[in-house]
Image (cartoon, rainbow, N blue to C red; front, side, top):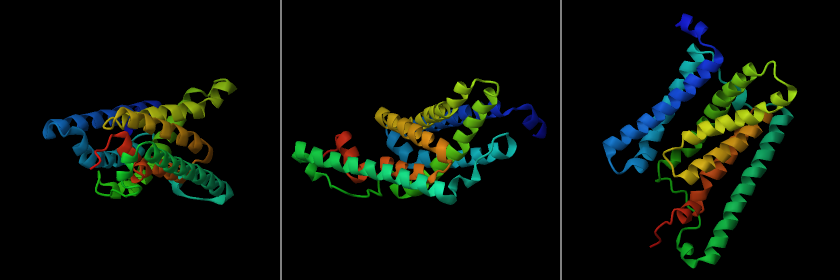
Length: 244
């Protein structure tokens, strides 16, 4: 294994990791579908995604142990005034998102009174094991930001050592873009609009992470975007929820 580690450079390890992760995700999705038949998506959201999470944990540990890939341990720590200011900024963004969702729900209620029959707020913890969501997003952001994005950034840094200053300034943008594309594919079990939302979320929080190197701000925004829409009935409206 030591010889293999010496032979594989960091760029090769990152590419192998991304290809392997996507392959396992697609394979799990298809196997789940073949076992459960027509109930493909909902069953995968309940169980398959959780299994994928365990696979990602194992992958991260193996690649950080036996491959030239590392995760940034202190991405979960808050040290100093800069971290607190970054957390405050991200918190304001998260609150603005929630306020926007709240306003949209009020608008839809006024536009179509039938939506008033959907509860204005509910946790819906029985839907796709949502009670795990707060823990899930902490892991997701740690995995995506402090491991995947950090290593993609290092990979790009390795390839532009002799590049022009303008190309180096583009590195944070390219890093966030590639990471967001990877995150997009990891949401293939969801509808296209959800995948696009995941891409946009990861891209924006990825740009913010490039500045503060802390995942807690991304966690707050992720929670606002991923958890609150169903709480406020927005997803039910988008999905044409049958009102009884």
